[in-house]
Image (cartoon, rainbow, N blue to C red; front, side):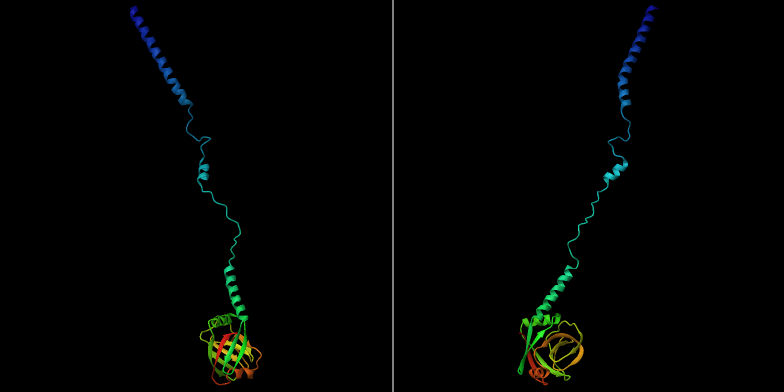
Length: 209
């Protein structure tokens, strides 16, 4: 009977010892698990607003530097070229030579005279003339010139362009829409008519001079 009691005590002690060892083995793991932080936002983790702002592209500040390009520079350059050509034409005089005499005329400054000077730089131009209306002598140019027609009270010595390709030398007067070409120097109506061959058909040669 005593031996049975002793065995029962040994079994009880062994069970208690086993339970103690088990408790010691599992307690650090439980405490470690308990001390681990629970999932959730941390100080270092950005919030959803931070994520939204950090993922958005950074917009560059608009360039407020004034542009150095002048939108009208091209138009100004073209206008300057036209004025230079017209001024160059005004600096020229032309000779009007026939078998009956030679006249000298100064040119206006416009696109028509600039084109005429350009043609004459390639060589003299011959015109077949005929009298018209008792006040002008007309010759047809080999090509049309730019027109800038205006109402003109033409006087003796005036040279005008009519319909783009008709060069008219006035020895009388007339009012009409013409483009100004130039004026014959130091000649009256009779001298102009005589130098251009009178009222009959004739030929003249235009040249720079």
